[in-house]
Amino acid sequence: MSPMSYELREHTADVAVEATGETIDAVFGAVADGLAAAMHDDPPGEGRRFELTRTAESREALLFDYLDELIYQRDVRAVLPVDNEATVRETADGWTVTASARGVPLSSITAREVKAVTYSEMRLESTADGWRAYVVFDV
Image (tube, rainbow, N blue to C red; front, side):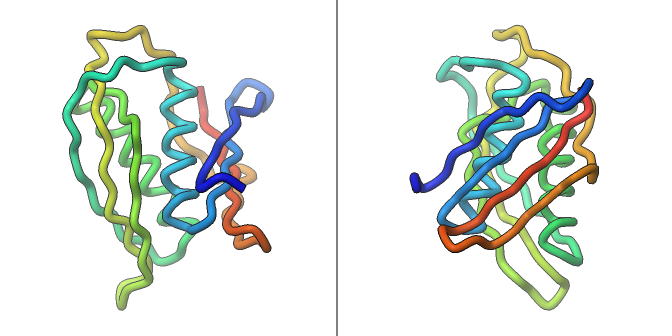
């Protein structure tokens, strides 16, 4: 298995991302990269990195909140978050992700609309080869 990968999956009127990674960190980054790919096929190399941190009561809630935050950052910063990196840790408050992404200015690309992340069919699981996630996005 490669360190991380994702595939876009058709899902009725929505789009889904199925991702794998050797670690939970890698699978979070891969799902985020899949979200970016659902919005734009081949983003240019421009853009500055930004950081974010989210905390939630469970790993699944954290994945949802992390992806929701990336969509929010897209909207408020007017950037497409690409080249995503994430570090996931269990804490006294539940689970925390500390992440960064390179923000490609939306003014330099034509991006497809992804409205929201959904809990519909969401899966995040440890496997014999690492981690696997499946997330559906409302488009």
